[in-house]
Image (cartoon, rainbow, N blue to C red; front, top):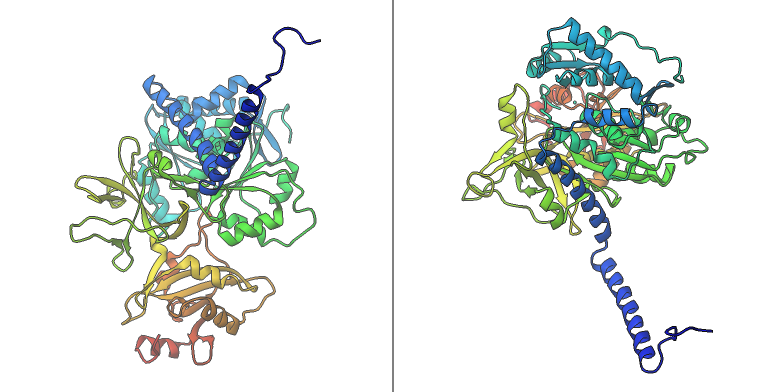
Length: 582
């Protein structure tokens, strides 16, 4: 029996309540429909920006309290909280947070007792991927030293230039690092000379929050095969693991043939990539069980749309977390929606935290276009423009160590008004109607021919579609008496495949405008890359298309024969003399 006051609404109240609830429900459905129709990425943007605000407020609180919180501080916090949790897995050996702490302290004591290093001194670190890289890094940080990571692939003049730039008091090289065996309780780069980017602690902390922002947790096992001397491997990768309190599988060098075996062996859930790495995986022979793994996220940059699609189709539902940023830059983007090909999305709310502009650029003069009042102009949506970001207290640019000229070269002054200063990323981007951003090309990778601007990546993608071509590197070469540069494609062939010159010709004339077709081909045995797998162009550009300088097979585009023909000395001379028109 119902008690007093338990009666259901009756009379005119019940229909009114029912009508009100029905209207509310219909309104909610309508609003949800309109939101998905007009603002389909609202909730993706909302949760992403919420994380950005959270991270920003946390860093601001540190600043207001006068606290200097570093990646090392975060690491020591985890040493106290979870000393026995695995931090690094390297070649089957497990190094816990406590192990790395003790080892780095031993390194610190060695320098403290056997060197004249003091707080604030710079120490250059020339090592490849291994646990001792982190031990030395943290050991020096415990002494208050500044650590300069040197590219372990460079030699001679470039290496000497890097050492001079950072002005170190000491150099740590792999051969002087004492050998370490796990304890018994453990289980078994760009054209020209490199520039030394200055990274402050605030930038390091921001970078280390990247994995967290993409949804990684302390339970993830993160696979790092990118070089630690690069900020992607050290700050985003190792720093990101520390921010989360997670475990990382560290590889000395990336191996496409071992990658998936490692992922299965160590139960990897997240891996770092650059575009070429994913492409290398797609080029591996297919085998059974390729989707039989626990990888759920991949974080990195530079993956092409076609490789992105192929990777997902072949290896399963892995969320690709593409991002954009430069080690020394003051602007970054993160693709939090999974839009294929995009480096991120920037609506008006995003620009409140990450201000930037895309401005018109003169490719022939290799400089931004300025109007009659000497101001730069913004491009329209859908048009490529040079990405720039304002330099101010909120978004500083610290420049390059020991290279004031290069630092000043990266700054644009009086862009939109007198006295403003912007960081020049050197990258061309396109923003579409939905505010998604796409990398278009590097300024240095764009050349002008026949009065038109040619993006090397576009040409390389077309040539690379041929089934017998392994890699393609496109660049411009100077030709006497011609303005601009003629296109040249350096290619490598797949194993046991032969070059079909007529097919190459047919491919480029079918899919490219006439001015974008490579005039010359160069066949290489192996493609040269940087430490982060970017294709080297500088030497190729310098060597040009002369058969006198180049021992590799060279070919010339013959429109009459509708094929590429061998580039002999006679043909070369006729081109140089202007007897053969390009």
